[in-house]
View 1 (cartoon, rainbow, N blue to C red):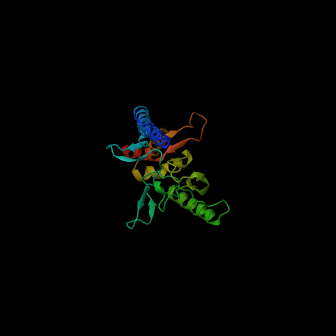
View 2: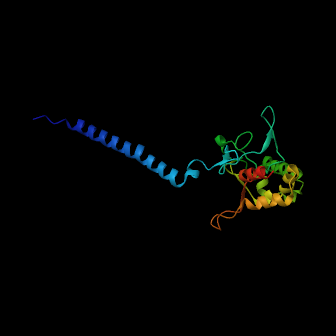
View 3: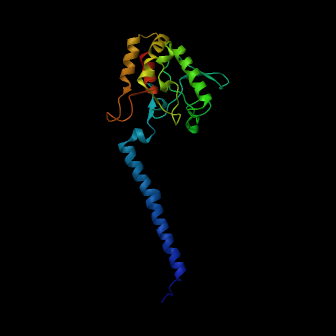
Length: 209
């Protein structure tokens, strides 16, 4: 009759078997099951809510904002492209909307730097869009906490319509209709605020042009 293994050895072997069992269940079976369900039921969301242009190329995500600007040759500065609707400001990265540097400005409401930035930005946006400073909505000069917000308010989209129409040689009515088409209502009718996804609007605008 074989001599039983010492208690410490049996305990270690039991622990090893449990470790292997839960590694297979939690490390392989469960992730594969959840991945399979997500791909079958929520494929678009599971893959990052990617947005494609008319040629089928990925141009961004409906969950992450981006700039629509003309970048200088040295890559250190950028100016808004008048042919596109502009996103709200972003403090994520040196040029904004850097998904690897998601952040807000970290400036408080008593910061004179923040006040100066708001004042200058409001003046620039009003001049760029040919409106008065009183018509510039709050989201046009304030960045989101993540710096990656893909949406703007219908009010901010509205003050950009005339400028975009002129830059693209389109009628104001056509551009306004497109903005209305891509304006989303409150989630479930009461959560959040009406919003416009800038990327999807600009893709539709390019197709229209």
